[in-house]
Length: 425
View (cartoon, rainbow, N blue to C red):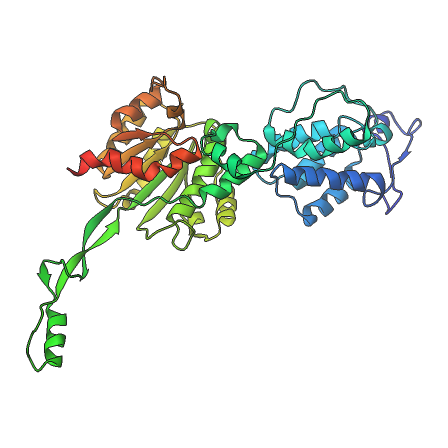
């Protein structure tokens, strides 16, 4: 292969031998129609929320020069260089199938370059992110074509009324644009945690203990006369927080938004964050992942990138019993006495052994202050924890709260206070 104008041989033709080998002059992947359509595909990926930069696009061009334009080879090469997150893999495959399916969508790229034309796909893409990424392409087709086979629907721009509506919209039903807007809004939601009087003291007018050191300093300034006796009060600080977030397939969209929310609400210096105490965050699926180092990033996007790189079982199954066993064996010191507030975020669809879950939840309840189960399925009025894992969680948790939309997150602090009130009496 050499530079521009390199010739590519179809794999099917090459397999038949050199006598009947024919080469198709396909041009250079860095210029012409292929470069234009590859750039358009990269823009569509970015609209779908896939992180694609100029460096990756350059790698994509080099990959196509190496593998040619056979459909399967092209898809595999682009996926290898453009996708780095597991959650984006299905989005890429659906978007690739739609983008390079129709000559109108790909500006007749396939009609001129691909060896065979694939059959026309039926139905809309399964993921809303893919449909939203293709909306600009469909809009261009609608402007230049007199007839159209598919009806295109456009999302209106997000206004104040849209934000009000999104307060009650389920996270799992959001479009790509709505999801990004809600992701920005949850960063500003506050989560004031319950507070307790610690053993440490600080000067305070309502304290019960005399502050003798301060009294001696004041007396020295007044010739030995003590005009007022300063006092020490117990320092008020928030309870330690331990968060366990389910990252299984059924919790995929909830987990990302809830991680963003918890980061913004518990990171000092962030928009809605107030004074926070100790905070430990773990993700669990088939295993346990410590996300506390990721939460040390001040930037929410950097936190999500670090968390995505750390989680190896994202969108898999759920074995909470094994994850809690790993927590007990390796991170038991994260539970600070009997004051720790544990927020276990899961839908309770556990696939592990109920006996192991029962044992580990019993240990967790004995070594924490309160165990709250935050369950997105509580949005359904008729929900009952009948699944094996959900039934065990229901018996051991001090309370259950719904976390499925922006409104539920805004009310979470008040709901936690209500649930914990009987525990403090």
